[in-house]
Image (cartoon, rainbow, N blue to C red; front, side, top):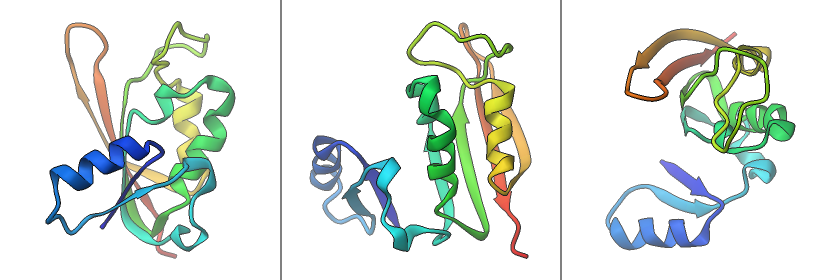
Length: 133
């Protein structure tokens, strides 16, 4: 298992908090991932990563998140979704329908979607799968 963050402090904290974990905690930049990670993971989990980024780099970020998903693998995406294409106030900036569609444009297929309501903005969990063909 591999987990990464761009923050050296976050990775050091995980390593200190979970010293006996089987997870390989690594410092990495989403936009410069290790080439050996390309289509190498059966499960990729992304929680609010894209919505924390400005709209200008979203397409590149989505491509980078999808890149490590193996053939037949899954991506679990946790995010908030906005109901218009207009640029929202933020951060965070919830995803639009067209931004959600970019995951499928990268070769994934939505398997299921679950919305968790709350008092402000509902959180959505989307499960994608990359075809094994």
